[in-house]
Image 1 (cartoon, rainbow, N blue to C red):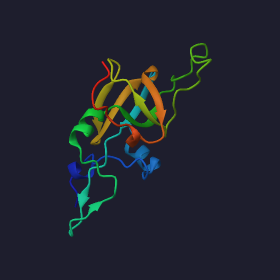
Image 2: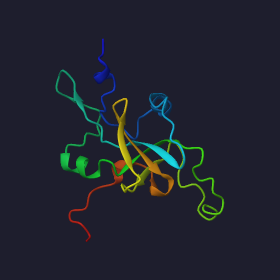
Image 3: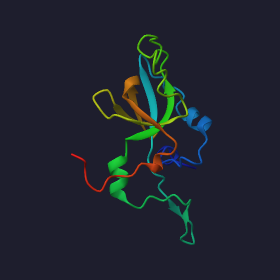
Image 4: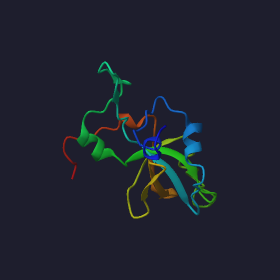
Amino acid sequence: MMTAAEKYEDKGIDPLNYDFEELLKLYEGYQPVGWGILIRVFKPLIMDKTKGGLLLPDILQDDKQMRETFYGFSGLVIKVARGVYKEETRYKLTGEYCKPGDWVTFSRGATCQAFAWKGLTSVRIEEDCILSIVDNPINIKPLASPLY
């Protein structure tokens, strides 16, 4: 039998092979309010080895520094609060920035609250902290040196 810690251990997420409906079920009981957006933080998949020593699957991220540097910069939108993007005058030109199921990048400012929900690394951010929608968070790579 699996322990609670094992059941909810955050081993990362494969952005090319995940079941959004299953993720949504894991977040039952959590609903952001006000202008909040719930995001499952992208964490490169941590690989387990088979008994023969093979790594599964093929998107292993060996570079620990890259994981730590970009850990928390992007994620999958899980839920949005009822009030998000409802101000017609504010979003008249831009429309909604994102919707559940979108991979996004976001600002880690004062309105970003990080936490673990059932072991899954998550953040609750304000609606205007979304910076971009991306097709695959693996495409985001660190710069060799900062621009500033």
